[in-house]
Amino acid sequence: MSALYTERYLNQGLTVPELQPRNRPIIGIAQTGSDLSPCNKYHVELAKRVRDGIIAAGGTPLEFPCHPIQETGKRPTASLDRNLSYLSLVEVLFGYPLDGVVLLTGCDKTTPALLMAAATVNIPAIAMNVGPMLNGYSGQKLIGSGGVVWESRAQLAAGEITEAEFLHHVALSAPSAGHCNTIGTASTMNAMAEALGMALPGSASIPAVYRERAACAYATGLRVVQLVREDVKPSDIMTKAAFENAIACCAAIGGSTNAPIHLNAVAKHVGVELDCDDWERVGYHLPLILNVQPAGQWLCEEYHRAGGLPAVVAELLEHNALPNPDALTVSGKSIGDNCRGDLSQDRRVITPYDKPLMAEAGFLHLKGSLFNSGIMKTSVISPAFREQYLSKPNDPMAFEGPVAVFDGPEDYHHRIEKSPNIGPGTILIMRGAGPVGYPGAAEVVNMIPPGELIKKGIELPCIGDGRQSGTSGSPSILNASPEAATGGMLGYLKDGDRVRIDLLKRTADVLLSEAEIEERKKSTGDYKYPKSQTPWQEIYRGSVSELSEGMVIKSAVKYQRLAQTQGIPRQNH
Image (cartoon, rainbow, N blue to C red; front, side):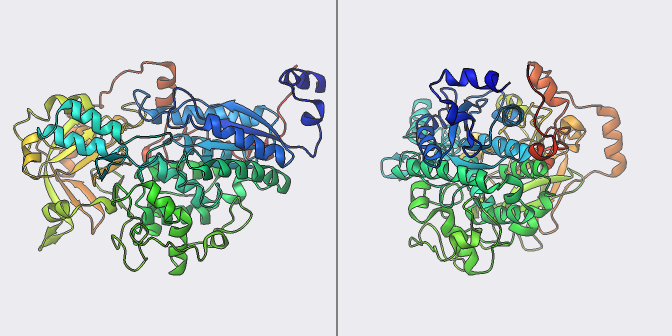
């Protein structure tokens, strides 16, 4: 068997001493870069420096591809593939003779997919992201990737720019290799990996093409070999304390509403109890101190030069606002020891804790007759939105209004300019956009009003059972669970029904009596959604949990710490 396992790997020019000594770890490099994944493609080059670090530390690197996940390329949505990539990586990490793994992350879903798999198998692992793109500019104006799309959509609807200008502006926002240069889901999730302790301190914010990124790749390769020798596993790092630290950091940087979905999923696979109540409990009362789009002004180059996540953590530490400073990280030190004293020298970008952009900037967790769980990002509530909807003297931080209901983005695009009953105060509802209904939970809730209302400067609240791009600055209510497709109340709404949102009470209710709701459910029947188009879509729909539960494969979470509980797999010949 030893000869059989070894002989084909020798064909690559490897030698027996590189493959068989017990003191020479074999390290996998989980490669997420490819032609189908341009945000991560620079990893094809960066992996060379990871290899150099592994070899220098006395390990043997074996690089392999991961299932591609590209947010801007995959239809119907890239989140459909997060669980597929997770499954395939679990099989690689468990079935092949790997002692440790470097997780090359970047675009939105690659980070949670790889962390979920590392948590399940529980061999020593370390994450390194590809890094954000360089700043985008239109003239002297900073334009952030992703965010410019939502801004330009509104300008196009208002007749202020042409379709050619729309495309030109969007292209200008993405000037180099790397993932989104805003605090969208990509930058958020890679910051979360660092805040969890699964990436080297300071690594999340380094722009892709900076020389420090390749140096970080080398250091990551060095460190993973030591993690194997020290037997430091993901379960030692990703504890409840680490997840609470990540939630705190997410609030401080104005992170994406996709973060609760993905971190709740990672937690389930590592055996940590984490839910959306934890996100409000730990994060809501913390301030926004990172002045980067979409919640702020700058982009990720300034964020990195201002000190990156260590400077954010240092600010939290100075005010005893990081929940668990002693949590262990892959560096071998605690997050507190990694970051204490590394305060930013650029207060334009990372503000003092007591002079924040917003005092309470975390997520609100809303519940009521409209849904059991929904998330609202408070750090992107604009002054105009606050004035229009949240400033009634006799009813502060609450609004209610009639709904306009859309069954997916196709229905929205077809009817938004034609519906006669959409006016100031209308609440836009997007349903059929969840894990089962879409399938995969798509980024389609960030709807804009009809062009005539945009010209008047009127915003409309949005609520949906799908997701919103992390680069969007709209204060939508998202991730509504249960979704319409699994019996959620959104599936029974009709145009003109009234909905009330109360942020002080954390409630979201449809203003119908219980008897009316029951009669509506009987008369309407089950929510109809498109049929599955591929085998995976059918498998996914039959196995996936709600967004509030992390959108995980329900039967997969019982498989934990495989390297410790399942032993070595049976021989293959």
